[in-house]
Image 1 (spheres, rainbow, N blue to C red):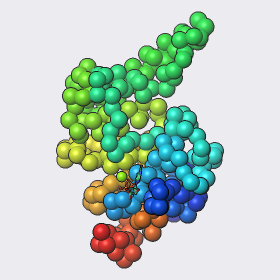
Image 2: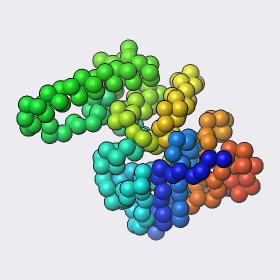
Image 3: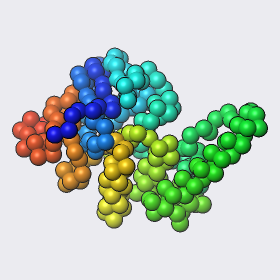
Image 4: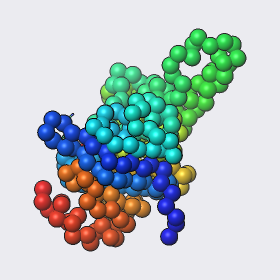
Length: 254
Ligand code: ADP
Ligand code: MG
């Protein structure tokens, strides 16, 4: 098998809320170019771990690196700039803006460039054209082109999930973290979401995703990490996880 080549490495990550330790991860690695599933019962700490690793929430302790650079302590937008982006379990689309506007707001370089000199202004207008093209390509890919000028608030739950993923891809990330991307998405769109995830992997993007549907997980994942009560209780290839008694017990225990 291939040599390990982790894109994300985390150590001793702890996050508690009052007396509750939501995350207490000793060590976690995500290998570059893989689709890795993060699974576990409700309340296991999956979303909290995403929040902490991507800088959307603080931690009590821990250190983690992305592509070899330390990122713990960085705010979310800086983590995103380094190429690690995430989606939320509950989508964050701006409901009063159009679908296309939502896409363009997610593009790189959206703050403060208006003060620049003429060369840089020219550069940014080229960048904006590129952003526009990319937004349109992504909308096409996620079958949202017909909704492009509608306000995001008029999308179905499933379409919002797709928009959320399309938005994340605007920064051309090296890694995407998807928190329950299929929840509430109709079966046809789930199929196309799965195809998008495979296509992203084929393009070299690393994917870490939270999902509950075992068929989906087993079908697409290269590696599975199992979280329960904030800790990694098992990890391995789909076939190993399927038959892992600790995992079965953790699920049956809830
Ligand atoms: P999962 O995504 O695996 O279902 P979460 O990360 O959402 O789990 O939650 C892990 C635990 O942390 C749960 O017990 C949850 O109630 C608690 N928790 C999450 N966020 C907060 C918060 N902001 N304040 C208090 N408790 C929280
Ligand atoms: Mg969650």
